[in-house]
Amino acid sequence: MNGVEIRGLCKSYGKIKAVDGLDLTVGSGQVFGLLGPNGSGKTTTIKLLLGLIKPDSGDALVLGRPISKGIEFEKIGYMPQETALYEELTVHENLKLFGGIFGMKKRAFLGREEEVLRIVDLKGRRDSLLSELSGGQRHRISLAVALLHSPEIIFLDEPTVGVDPPLRVSFWKTFHDLKRKGVTIIMTTHYLDEARKCDNIGLMRSGKLISKGSPGRIMKDTGTDNLEDAFLKLASAGSPEVLT
Ligand SMILES: Nc1ncnc2c1ncn2[C@@H]1O[C@H](COP(=O)(O)OP(=O)(O)OP(=O)(O)O)[C@@H](O)[C@H]1O
Ligand SMILES: [Mg+2]
Image (cartoon, rainbow, N blue to C red; front, side, top):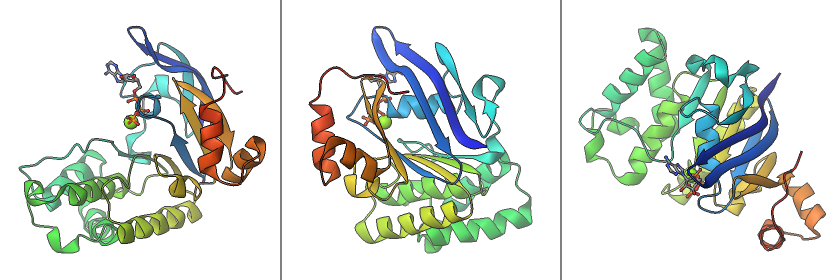
C-alpha cells in the first residue's frame, strides 16, 4: 500500500489555481519533500490530503483510504505551517489535549509524552505555558504533537523553519529513524540541503508538479550536479507541464 496516491487533484480560490491537476504517488516508508516557491500550492496540497479543505475535483488515497471518505486521524500526524497550539495552556496540557483527541490511553500517553519531548529537546519545559516559549520552541512542540500518537504517516509543513542548526540535524535523525520503522513522511521545505536528504522530491510551480523523482534523478535529468542549479533550470524553463 502506498502512503499517498493523488489523482487529478484541483483546488482554486477564485481565479487562483492553488492546486492544478496534481498526480503523485508516495510509497510507504519514504521521506518525500515538496518544494516550490511561495504560493506554489504546497500547503494547499497537504490540507487537501488531510481533509481540512475539499478539492474541486480529483481524489487522493491516504494509506489506501479515499480522502472523500474522511480521514483516519489516529494514523496521521500533522505539523501545520502556522502552529495551532493553545497559548494559555502548558506544554503538558497541550500534549494531553491532543493525546485525548487521538484517543490515547493515559499510560501510553505519558510514555510517548516523555519520548516526544526528548526528541524536540524540551523535557525541561513540560510545565511552561506555551506563551512563555520562544517561536522556535513553539515550533518544536508542534512537531512533538505531530509525533505523539505514533502515526503511520506524517505531514510536516516546513518543520525546520526557525529551528537552530544542531536541532535540525537531530530532527533529521528522527525522520530517518521513523522511516526505518516504515513511517511515511511528507514534508515541505525551502532548504535544498534538506531536499537532498529526501528519498524523492516534487517541485511545484503554480499548482502543478513540474519535476519529481530522487534528488539524483532530478540532477541527471536537468544535466546539473547540484539541486540549486537543477531547480534554477526548471524554474526558468517554459510554462509548467503536468507530469504523470
Ligand atoms: N484560504 C485561501 N484563500 C484564498 N487563497 C488562498 C487560500 N489559501 C491559499 N491560497 C492561495 O493559493 C495559492 C497557494 O497557496 P499555498 O499556501 O498552498 O502555497 P505554499 O506553496 O504553501 O506557499 P509558502 O511557501 O509561502 O508556504 C496562493 O496563491 C495563495 O494565495
Ligand atoms: Mg505553505
